[in-house]
Length: 86
Image (tube, rainbow, N blue to C red; front, top):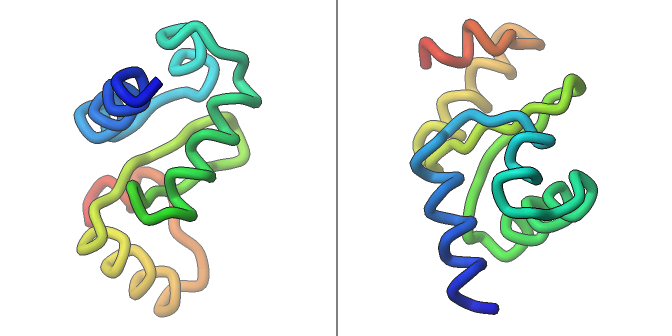
C-alpha cells in the first residue's frame, strides 16, 4: 500500500533515530520486514541512513551522510554520540 509506505518514510524522517524492534511494533511488522523495507528504501534512494549492530537505525539526509562519510574516512570509526554532533 503506497499510503502505508509514505507513512513509514515520513515516520523515519521525523523520528531520525529509532530502535528497529520499536519501529516494527509501531507499524505492526516483523523486525526483519522493517530491516528489509529500510534497505529497499535506501537502495532506491528514498532515504539514507545507518544501521548499527545493536538494532538501531538513524536516518540521515544526503548532506548529513556526506559529513558522516567524511568523518569516518578521517577517523576510521565513529560512535553514535559523535554522530549526533555532526
